Image (tube, rainbow, N blue to C red; front, side, top):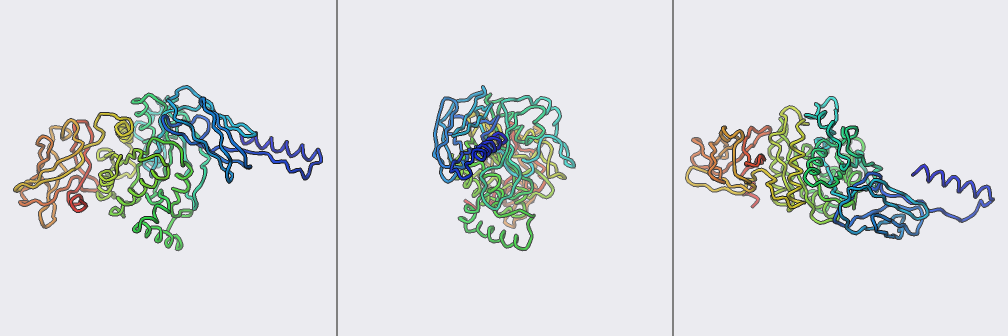
Length: 480
């Protein structure tokens, strides 16, 4: 299309020169569409769908699609129309955008769109990336990935000092030839969701390895929070003395990889990040809560589902960070926690067992976004009571019941502490929907915790096969 426009402009200028009109005041409008609106895209069903772009001249731009025709006035070089909510379309449609020139966008589907974002464990593609270990079972997954109704829009890695308007990305149709470049977690999520819904699935793949959550948050949203505003000030100071990688800047990923997507219609977000906030785990609940609010506000589509993958076991990953993620889900509406205590690698920050992560994301999405009735989270600590020398724990998301896996094994990973705050391994037993803890070394228990280690050795699940999140009771009591 760009080549066509350039040739047209050259022919127009040549005509003027040959006709002697060196000083003619004629102008020719050139329109463009944000690269999100390109061949093979998926649009969100059932909601208003913004479509936008730019124009070199003032005037009007018209969008024709799926029986609708809308016109927008160009203002300050930009235009935007809002398509009325549409039903699912598995059949390819064509969108036309025209002023003087006409842009045609082919093979457009209507279904479900999710933003898959975070750092390296979301960024890691399905295919090989030496020297990282290969994704478990990637070759078999590649060979079966003939899903023409699943598409991915890749957002190039970019820090930007100011909010960007476009990323010049492209949509790719899922096939054995293309899926190796899909986010592994995003692919497993999309494939499982497709099996459940049987509608087109689009994923916006916007992830960057080694990045903290505040880089994904707008500067305005950080500055509105007094404590996080200090992050901005410190960030600027350390940038001035060269502590950050070249090009890294305050809110740089929000500017370069999220803002250009606004206000594309999405169903929700799958978020896998946290490792780069590990050394500031005590602040992470506030940082992530603030970021979720920021995205929901800026996308302007209500409190859409926000699915959070808990960081996997690793020798350097603190339990405080996992608990901060748990607390975000406990306090922020329409969120879910994807627990990965059985999907980690103590020696590899990039665990290769990505399929259960994607499947659990799809399960949570089905429950939060599509009114699915199945249990979608493992047991989540709720409250405790102390009776004599025992501590009784109650949980939410017990599903079909509480269990150890394998079932013949005793529960492990639970600890008790008395008034001195020293924790000791606890005997744990299941009594209906309650876990009862006791320890010969703690006669008067005051606190309990579970899976409280960088690499937790745990086996507590619900009978739906979903692992319980690590937790500590004292944090809940202090905050409530």
